[in-house]
Image 1 (tube, rainbow, N blue to C red):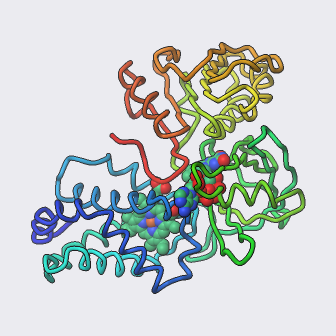
Image 2 (spheres, rainbow, N blue to C red):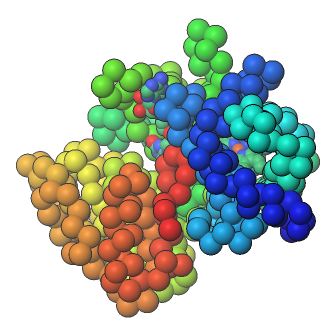
Image 3 (cartoon, rainbow, N blue to C red):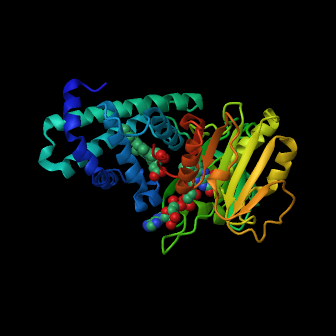
Length: 404
Ligand SMILES: Cc1cc2nc3c(=O)[nH]c(=O)nc-3n(C[C@H](O)[C@H](O)[C@H](O)COP(=O)(O)OP(=O)(O)OC[C@H]3O[C@@H](n4cnc5c(N)ncnc54)[C@H](O)[C@@H]3O)c2cc1C
Ligand code: HEM
């Protein structure tokens, strides 16, 4: 808990910090990377360039300060901490890195707010930072212990690429087995791995997350990666491009253990899996899991894509339908000209997804994954139709969470 004196100071300065949140974190990253260039490899350069990660960090610190001082605005806090802790654990963040972030973040607050940062203000925000840091460090320690990672030890393990399959023009799947010959650990559908790659031409290391798209409990793991193409002059995706262009069978990839706070299989009742584009990867793991362990489950798959040909892993759905007799499939393709692909019992509609036409069984839990705008649209409609927020899980393939 925040001390009473600090709470008063934080309440008084929160509006100024909130207003300058992005400027503060912008300064913070510049300072920190100047002093610790080795940390550049840890952070996502795409997010740095587009400002997404800056916004996520600013939002987290400000929301936590609001939470501590009883400001009701902001997200429910537990899921936010879980989201950050799982992401951090997948990146191998250690307790020893928190003082570095804290030092540079607080120095950036002082730089941006100037004379307003008296010693009392600095001490109060230091307290906020460390309360938040301690919560995260504790959660991350539990995650490492659960994944068998020694304290402060590396999360990375070498995996051998045992298969590579082209799914669509832009999507490739890789199957992976531990290089030391050990077994691939079991995982809950919805979990993801971080993949660390050394880019060519001395461009350093970059890490990205990929949801496991194969069957939990299988001898191998599978990830399914969409090549990200730069829009309007922006560069092509670094890691997806590297995986597509440089990685083939027999190569080694460095992977973290499987982390992720979202379970894509619901609570045992009817399950609604809603995805768009490459956001189908957690749903495919959920289907494979249920086909084996709970085949009578009532499951509705709703998927939106540009065309049937762009719909990755579509060819796996007929086999899932055979194994899951209560599986219904609803597809929205922006262009249905080529929808007559191999047999699939599905309702196929043309155009963008129409949320009010998504069938929702009584007592269903939903799992959403796709672009933020798509998930906001679908989630908003499910809420309006009476599905409680706690029964709508979702995965964002980037930093951040949905509002409210
Ligand atoms: C939990 C989770 C699970 C995920 N699961 C999957 C999955 O199953 N499959 C999958 O394919 N992806 C998945 N992702 C997304 C994946 O982690 C990567 O974000 C994705 O592959 C893009 O990474 P990249 O390195 O190729 O692109 P980046 O290099 O990170 O680029 C991303 C975007 O930023 C833009 N950008 C970069 N630099 C600049 C600049 N200087 N100016 C303007 N724009 C710029 C690029 O043009 C591009 O649009 C997941 C993400 C998360 C968080
Ligand atoms: C109290 C301290 C911290 C807070 C509040 C915080 C907050 C966040 C948030 C909100 C995210 C985005 C999560 C998401 O994907 O939704 C994130 C990601 C990340 N954090 Fe932290 N963090 C803290 C400490 C640290 C430390 C000590 C490090 C290590 C140097 C670190 C490194 C990272 C990295 C590398 C990412 C992913 C960046 C990316 O993908 O662009 N964080 N953090």
